[in-house]
Structures are given as structure tokens and as C-alpha cells.
Length: 93
Image (cartoon, rainbow, N blue to C red; front, side, top):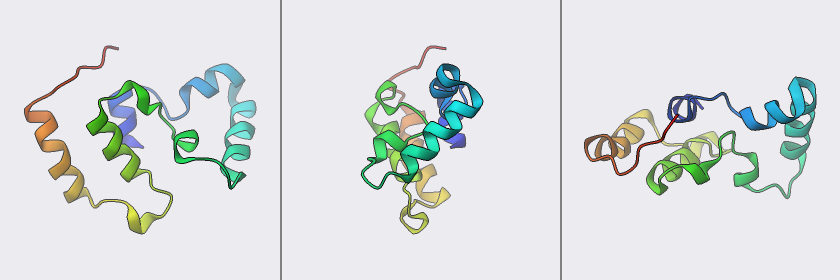
């Protein structure tokens, strides 16, 4: 989640909280998370569509609902290093 906050400069689910307010957003997010048919994209705290594909793939792995499937910090650093050394996209704030 911290990775997403750094990249987007926003809190998780910021758009939902802006639209629905704190209580409405909490209820909405809890309802989505409780729905077994919800896809990982729907559950993502950040809109991955605004990111380069490489960043979105790393974020998806880091947010895997099964902790054992998430990469180690060493694996994340290895994946991010080429992106830092040769940036292909700059997000505007």
C-alpha cells in the first residue's frame, strides 16, 4: 500500500472516500471485499490503469490477498531497480 501511496501521492481508495465520505466509503469497500465474486482489480486500493504496466504488475503482486504469494522486499527492489534506472513514464501530480 505504501508503494501505491508514493506513486500516486494519494491515500488508498481516495476516489471512493472523496465520492462517498468516510462512512459511506467504509461500507462500500467492506461490501466489495465481502463479495466472493469481486475481482482483484475491484479490490485494489489504487487505480492501476494510470500506471505503466510494469508498476501495475508489481503492485498487483504486492497486494495479493494471500500473503504467502506476495513478493519479498528484495524481490520488489529487484523489480523496481530497472524502472528507476530507465523510467518510461512520469506521473503528473
